[in-house]
Amino acid sequence: MSSSEMADKLGLHSLGQRPWYIQKTSACSGYGLYEGLHWLSNNISNLADSCSYNHFPNPFSRPHKIDLTLIEIENVILL
Image (spheres, rainbow, N blue to C red):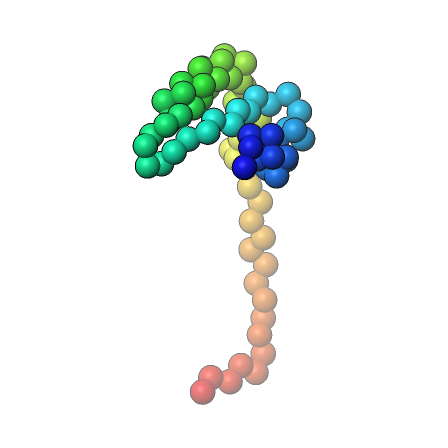
């Protein structure tokens, strides 16, 4: 399968401005492994500079409300 076919099947073109890259590799020979990891390490460091941790909600930013309503069950038969 070609790289363009792979990108189409994975829907990578719909990711907008997010960087992506397809590196042909071989699990048996290791062909392309270092090239793919090199691209990944370069792009992770570039993304770290522009990334903000505000993308994820802070679970402690608002008080949690727990509903402690008791439910009364009548005529419970245990066998």
